[in-house]
Amino acid sequence: MGKVADTLKPGDRVLLSFEDESEFLVDLEKDKKLHTHLGIIDLNEVFEKGPGEIIRTSAGKKGYILIPSLIDEIMNMKRRTQIVYPKDSSFIAMMLDVKEGDRIIDTGVGSGAMCAVLARAVGSSGKVFAYEKREEFAKLAESNLTKWGLIERVTIKVRDISEGFDEKDVDALFLDVPDPWNYIDKCWEALKGGGRFATVCPTTNQVQETLKKLQELPFIRIEVWESLFRPYKPVPERLRPVDRMVAHTAYMIFATKVCRREETE
Picture 1: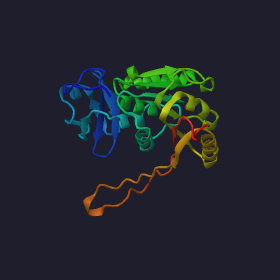
Picture 2 (picture 1 turned 180 degrees about the vertical axis):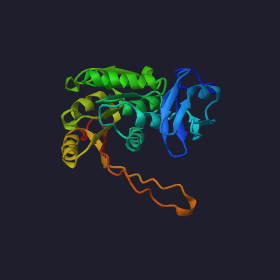
Picture 3 (picture 1 turned 30 degrees about the vertical axis):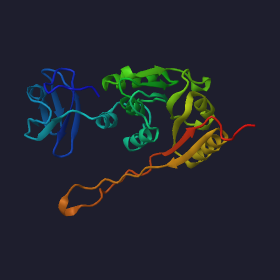
Picture 4 (picture 1 turned 60 degrees about the horizontal axis):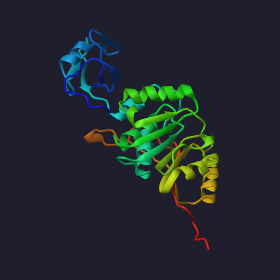
């Protein structure tokens, strides 16, 4: 995300967070009023204050001016596809060991959620090469990444990955397509020796097909994970889990490329 100065200006994005847990992600404009169920919010008052300050609606409801995090942006973004949720995307980025200066391939970029996580991790000296065969999704991802200040770290290519990848010796590759087993050979060709691979599958049948293909090729450290997060109610006197839990969202498969698995004579 781009750095926002303490003095807010037109075009800055803010998150207005209220005591009833209502939140509004807003692009600031002068002389604009935001009509909500909590009352009217005069955005001119937001300009006069800064991050962390209190804002009140016309009905007297109290909220706070915040700078949105990447999670805020992803969970509130315009989307036309299923996304990799933050509880999974952060784990994937760690398992891929994405770091400053890395070259990463992201396939099936969709709305750009996972691409944003990778782009932030590679830093200003790294690059994410994002492949998307549907032009309308590529444009949506470009719009979202531009809004979040990350587009300079990403090169979006509109094409089918069955043709293979332009890049070679990349540090890591994330594959998000319905039939990942059909493209794993192309992924192996694009990765450097020791490069890390990850994909996501919604069903166990897809996981099984993907594992079979991974085991046919020079990949090691093949693992399958799912993440289960359970938030708690932040009430000291009655600490207990929230009533509704988002459990399984996807199976995550990881592997590491090696040049060969057996010594040749």
